[in-house]
Length: 431
Image 1 (cartoon, rainbow, N blue to C red):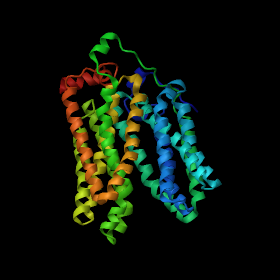
Image 2: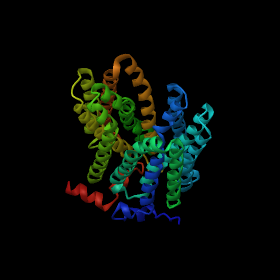
Image 3: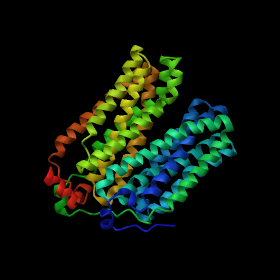
């Protein structure tokens, strides 16, 4: 049964994010959708290699997936305004999983790339829609916690389904994984039917006075986007090379730890992303944990470079993974909330698109560029360069804090709306 949405005034009166119509179905749908994606993420390249293709084509299957993802994310805000969240998310969940069945026809080049691209279209639309939808469904004062909970559902899904896909491939064969991914995505599509039938708001046009006193939208989202990109580039190297680096450093202990490193990093990101959201809600605005999160991420990737370069005990890489993952989780949430708070309510879908493009493009770019560095200067060199990139993101955030102290951005954004709530005024008087 499709739920009808509440008005914005009614939503703001809710005393819990869990009472927001459509919030729980959205979380379940996102859990299933990311489960479908995670099942196939490590399996498709492995299947390509087993089919006799070279590493270049195996990598291209992921590359074309991400290219289709980013291209789709650019156009998703327009689709959300014209069609609404419900139909876009149902269609995207369907596109994310069902094309996996096309691989049952074989793994020729055309088949491998075509169905990977189709799945990327579904993933791109879904990632933008789910982040923006959270801002539409829950009260503004719970947005940080709600965004953090979204990260928890995504993180748990990945921690379960990434190893599960490899397990099923080993025990039941690749066709079983394709069928499982399609089935899980259909669960997501069914849950999306319970999302309220609402559309993204059309963009508002500021008055001449507002244009004169407000910064352009791209300036408001640029630095949060750079913060995400700087860390997601390092994440591209971490996800691609860290398990191998662990095993290379210590073939005995590393063989055990290496397989869990991505889960350790992802678990830290999940916990710290939620914690960052709680702090943002208590403060009534994001930003308090952004620089600490970036510093944590820098410390983690720099420690990875030092451990690998100096041959330190492999357990130091576990600490590095926790630091990097925790910092990355904080920056993810802070950047998304900052974009929501800085832009008008009518542009939350654009904020979600910019955030997702920054994340996905950074991950792909990092895998490519830092992989090239690793080929020339080993894994330690790749992580050292990653640390430098993160440090540039920190400097950009500090500069933005200085400039932002004099910036006016009161155009129906979340910060302005919170000031209109009795709760927000009470907090300021008590502060």
